[in-house]
Image 1 (cartoon, rainbow, N blue to C red):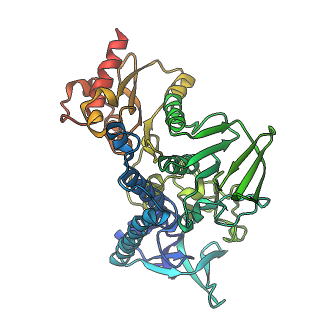
Image 2: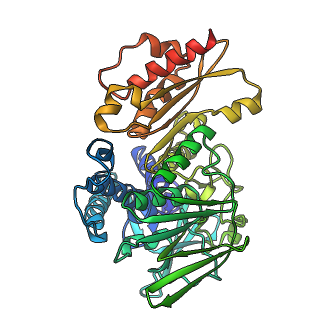
Image 3: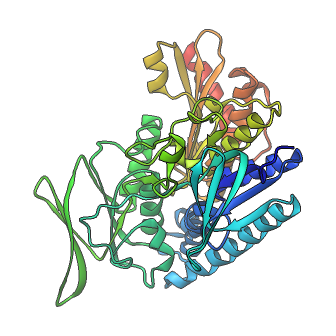
Length: 467
């Protein structure tokens, strides 16, 4: 045992930090988690992943979204949906998740320190208490930077948290807008745009890129764009914002968004979601010879080590894919490496879940990547409307797509858009991980009626294409 206070100090209590701390505690290490907010869980539990997904679930239920195909577009579980209706469920889930997380840390004897952490030297972290203004230092053999990200903000835009706001402000909104503009068509922007559109809000998405979510399969993003337009979402892609200003007239308060092309978008409220920046500004990285890029991200090697081998970084602060599930695994792997715990992982087979309406999930390679790599492939597709379960749940537009090698028939990738996509993807992930081929799905019996049958239908479609 070293003479330092802890074996590991984790700065940040989001998914990466929590998983790393618990992994280290499981092998008998002395661990402290430093969290500057009053509660644990980071952005994921308090303002990001959990709130946004719970909000989505509340919208899906109260709007009767999945039942409209059966009972008509006028169908609603609750006729007049207020913001408070959505937040009631969200608040409950957040409180529950915070309690579960605190119990996990307590059960594993992880000390949680409520303070802001910054570097003094390579093995010393200074804890600053904003309330008292005091500080103290603690030392550790290893340090993990898991501070996550903050919303990227343009200083020229007059944010007020109500008319012009960022995603962190969403849970504080008092009323639902009739018209909403979303600046930024990344994951956060697309998720919230589709959630509000499902409530009947007229949404306009603005982004300088020509395509939504360009890291996904083109056919899936095209399908998402189609669904958005079906829900009266206006897509202003390839457009750059030149100014945002609030104004009032006889009909109330509005926001005017000026575009470089000369167009204007008028909305009641505006969500600014152009991305997130690593929360590294206050860490004093210079004291340990580290630096962050212009978006606050820290570079790491395959073991999540920074240029200082005993200082690690994991989660959103190291960049793409910046998803809670991948952050958890990065934290675990970083902790295993620093304490010599055997572990293995296949980052290329991490699934991505995008909680738009309809939801999207992918794993493995997509068509563009395989084409770029010169890999011969074929595809097989299954539409939910072909599957009895799709008819039962009222999802007639879902799609499951398999990509496989034309010669070996080995499965290479899976992309899904539709109800249950983020659950359904794990079947394909398991087959990919085990090196299986397309014939597995043909030879397997799936429960009937289930959405999992899409795998069999898609596999048969793909094999038919070969002949």
